[in-house]
Amino acid sequence: MKVFYYVSFLIVLTSLSCQSSKSNFTDMQIQNLETLVAGRHFKIESDRAYPQSSYAMQQVLNSGIMQPGSSSGTINLIGNSNFLKVSGDSISSYLPYFGERQMQVAYGGGDATIQLNGLVRNYQVKKNEKHGGYTISFEADSHAERFRVVLELFPNLKSEIRLSGASRHAISYSGQLSSVKE
Image (cartoon, rainbow, N blue to C red; front, top):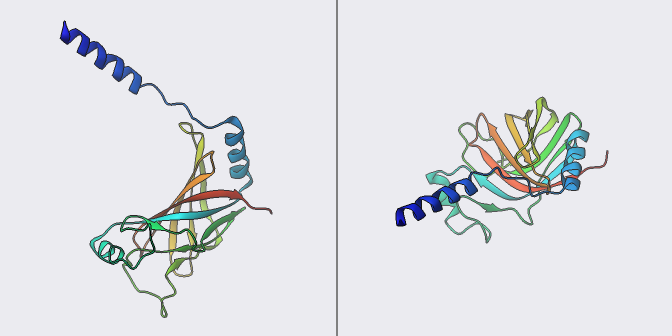
């Protein structure tokens, strides 16, 4: 008899956990995000950076030289100037970079940030039906490197940025999305 109750409990638990999850966002939040994405005029300010973990990065970031709230996997950006702005078919960014370089570094250490400026290429937008947000991907150039950029935008205006380039380890950022006046 006990086996029957255990099996029944497991079936109920499994059926509850397998139900499709519905978005917890309001229709107004989803519509606001749709307007921002369709207009292609928005700005993201990040509050956290997530560098690719490596032994060297762990040694540097765990040494205690980073600001409070930072570790080898998460860097607190609150109070640091940063942005990624999309304006039509153009992009501009100023994102601090934490990670390893695989090739040359610019004279004077000018590569401590990722500064994308110019036109975007291969701009693609995909609606995420699960949470009502969008995934936007494109390519953009800094002064010496081409980056693949993936933006995850959520109806509550939270965002994730993933950047990968040819000569740097990948890095991600999380932050807040806002509109930009044309």
